[in-house]
Amino acid sequence: MKRALALLALTLAAPLSAQQTNLQRQVEATLAQAPAGTRFGLVVADASGREIVAVNADQRFIPASNTKIVTTALAYATLAELDAPDAAGGASVRLDGRDVVLTGRGDARLSSAPGCVTDCLAQLADAIAAQTRQVRDVTGDAGWFPDERWPLGMSWNNIPTRSGTAVAALSLDDNELALEVMPGKPGAAPVLRHLGYVEIDNRAVTAAGGKTDLTIDRLPFERRVRLTGTIAADAPPQIVRMGIDDPAHYAAWRFAALLRERRVKVTGKIGSRYDPPSRAPGELARLAPPPLAEDIRTINKVSQNLHAELLLRRVSRATGTGSAADGIRQAEAMFAKAGVPRTAWDLSDGSGMSAYNRVAPRGMVMLLRWIAAQPWGAAWRETLPVGGIDGTLARRFKGTSLEGRIFAKTGSLTGTNALAGYLLGKSGRPLTFAAYANDVPGSGNATAQMDAALLAVADAN
Image (cartoon, rainbow, N blue to C red):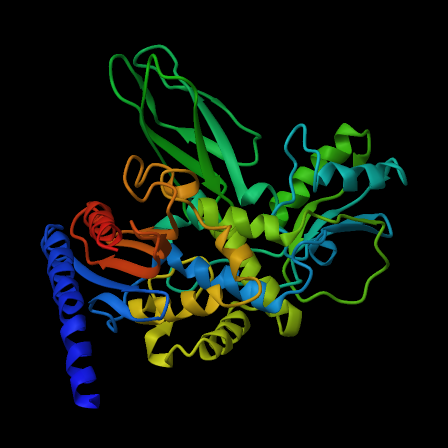
């Protein structure tokens, strides 16, 4: 009787096995349409953890911004009161004799924008203006974290851009400078508008009937930026965003400007320091930024690099030094809790800008399934982009069966595409997946083949 039941079970399972084999072949054929030389990794698992599709499941891939999955989940797993005002991270100001010291504690949202209503540098300037009409030096203090301004393994050519702006405990305006470029007369240089923190070497040209293609470049720690390329004569104003190498100095520079607007005379120098904090007089004022949970949503939805790096250091500072290495050690403990083999990952940063990062698709699926089972798993999933709806997936999967039914973190570096998260099959089956494309030749990408493969899986389930 038992043998008969076993044979019946095998008979019933055979069609499913054949269907799975056909789906595997379909997925492999779809991925094979990518540019020659592209290396893919893909795992899709059902609610029980059974793998439906597996391609190079244990090979290791550069995950790009999929790294933010680890960083943001780690924050949920280790930091308390994510939904409360972020009193621990707020910037503060104090008077040290006649000198002003502006101190950061890892808040990524401090703003000097006109019309700022929350987490505003102007509030701290008001506190100084209420105490005195003259100060000497204004110093930005970023010593709350070790001075690790760029992730290990980040390409140096990213440094002048907003994607590679420096990381510091005192950060302002996303550590970005905005340069507004407006067309001039055809053949002439465009008209520029900016705060004046850097000098612009304007070598761009206004092109009649041409296209807009602007590029910025500078050497590390220089405050002279070269603008090249063209702007079409009929183009609207273009905003070019630049990275900042000394965020604490920029914050102090902007703070001094806000003091002058309040008729506080600044007679000394503008400076920055990145040494560990020492005993100092009490704070005159301190901000309480919005909850960290809101920032985690920003990190995952729009893939904000600086905020992710600061979040990793916030996690590290809660129990350690505030270094990236201490944060990664905490990530190692989280991977272990999730049952992910140590051979399935290596990380060097919290944002995914490092080319040293590696993850295996099977390992990422294991982590994602563990996250889903945590008390905070549903809240974390809500921070992910939704296919065809918002964030970095707003334009992907639109008009397909996965519109509004795939919830995943994207990733992109030169030669690298990544997507990992959750999706609903055509029947409503919940699936967990991780997909990676590395070694994509030239300046191409493999997102079309990746998306087509996931659609095939969803439609078959």
